[in-house]
Image 1 (cartoon, rainbow, N blue to C red):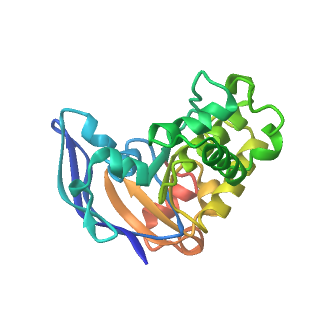
Image 2 (tube, rainbow, N blue to C red):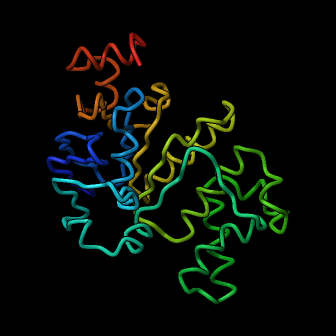
Length: 248
């Protein structure tokens, strides 16, 4: 099943064109790893999927991005961003308790039933592999969590509003190996219920978690294939050169 169908996508910010003629499909309940050097268009591509690029006045696009067969530009942006949640590179917990960080989005979407909110918070923390570590201190400030725990808290906050897609933009860039492993474990489990798109500069991470991998270079999609094939027998020499660290 196809979640996103991207057709000849071109994006400009003023006179700068970070994406050029990108065509690809994102499968539902799979992890798509997106790799490539800096300024290859990875994050612009990711932010297109929930229309965050729209927030820049100089933004314009040509092409189509379909979600479940419908043009994403036909959706109200806030409605779309509820369906397509995003976890950023640096964790940004709110200046609230652990519980209220996760409950925040649930309340913002109109839920007032205390038991429903409590259930949503617990389920989201469990899915983010954080519940067992924080269940006895939910009233503690989120700022007292470690960096890795804060990132998983932000994942839980995203999950609590019940999205269909989760976009990860370098979610482990500032984390130690143990915290990174926990976030990756969470991703692998989450794909059973969600579609995941992961932008990462860590090619080993892309290889570990991605079902498919897309390689971007200079705003163009060079190659998209099953991850094992990308990392063992890529079709394009540029992909092989990047994976082997010859540039980037």
